[in-house]
Image 1 (tube, rainbow, N blue to C red):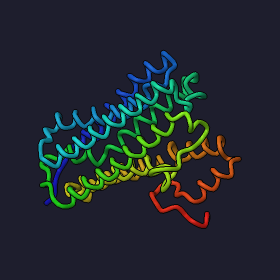
Image 2 (spheres, helix red, strand yellow):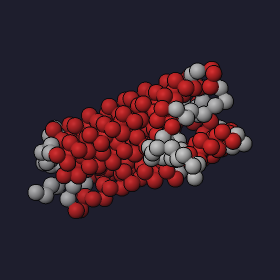
Image 3 (cartoon, one colour):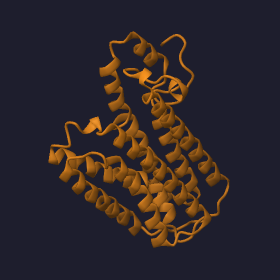
Image 4 (cartoon, one colour):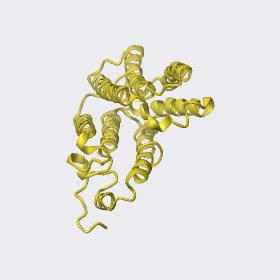
Length: 265
């Protein structure tokens, strides 16, 4: 069965995403603060989900499930990142940006595009005039989302506990999930968005497969742009001269959860 969707929702979500980032940018630029950057990111997904359900009357079980999973993820991540930035006081990534209007603005533009692109599979699913039933493929996608969500929560909790222990000052975490990946939180993030794409897949006709941009975008973004590369560079600057860190780096997968290499190669 072929399903049709409202293509105007693609433009609507792009406009809403830019509007949300614009409001937060005005606040952030006015006070030269980066305390709301991550909050605006996660909040945007929740708002888009709610708006799409209301606009399209997306009340089919598969649509409500997809929307609920996005909102749960956004609420958890937003609360965690907000509490972290309030505790730390600032985000070091913006030390060379928050005082430069155009550079700071560019971040918010990229974030608006990122939210819109990553959300595409759910946007299309919530825009269907009639939705497929909640079958095995969609449930498998929801299960994959749950696995990614659990990985993200566990790795964030482990790192939070590690950093709040004074004994670990000047050290890096290499226990728990961090024994199997140097960035398990990002791995969990990618897994859950691929899960949402699979959840939506039964409703996607060939003309809607552009929604694949969503999980591909978040994968490439975290692997090559704003996630892994920045933290790898920061860790190398802090610990690069430490042989123990180099040993950890060589035996531990950079992204995918894998058993540590025993030979260090």
